[in-house]
Length: 126
Image 1 (cartoon, rainbow, N blue to C red):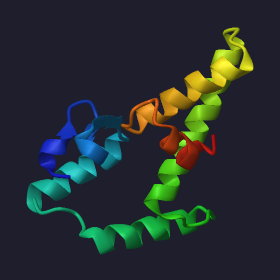
Image 2 (cartoon, one colour):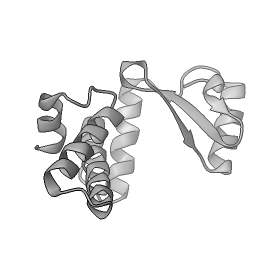
Image 3 (cartoon, rainbow, N blue to C red):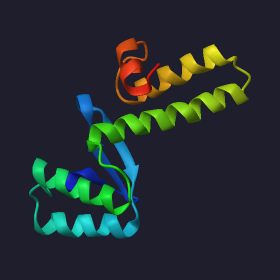
């Protein structure tokens, strides 16, 4: 992440797996703090080990179990899947098509092809 990653309106663009670009909204305080820091120190905020240590401390501070960033990615996919499945069922889809649609949406959100059954198995146990 560099100063160029910080966008107007308290947004940040991060490049994820496979070069996928995602834009997130930050609190105005965090956006301002990052902008100030990067204006004075344009180098990256942390190396890989520093990032991993900070991530671990943050997860433990919430009382959660540390599973690494890939574990968080997997948990996020499962939460997204559950929400999409519930939306599809509410919209009137039968269970099997709702599950298929929700799984495809979740896997695609991670930047993979929606039809990759190996990814569905790994991320969603489906």
